[in-house]
Length: 205
Image (cartoon, rainbow, N blue to C red; front, side):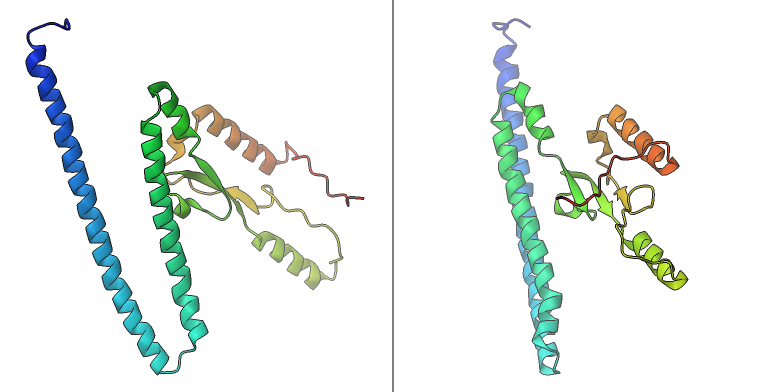
């Protein structure tokens, strides 16, 4: 349609109005969600405070109470900080030129380490390299029982079930299919013994 087409005088104002209406409704939903979130937090905090006060009265030690309550508080604060950071990042990305936006979104993705850390960034932590010491502990225990244990380097990894990838939590579409395929093939090759990960465990001089 040409720029000076008569219909533009109707279509353009309509499109602008619809976009403004969209933003208004989204802002209302966001404000309503935040208000409900504050209400839920306030109620749960009050209930917890009552329970903890009762626990003190019956002699539960302060250290036990803090061990139960403090980690949850820290987790909630971390999640709130992450939400604020994501909001700021979204605003910054929106301000970029269109061709730079996809790249900026990509670099916000992350990998967790040691445990499944998706809960720290449900939309950002694609997967995690997990460490599971149980196969090593079992092997050492069996060696002790058999009388064959000796002080030496124990190196456990993918082949032994001590290192793996956590669930993608529905974020696997963010990883190139060819990359996922190659990673899975390499993991299976390590498990089968057809590929050995180079590892130098000699002491540093």
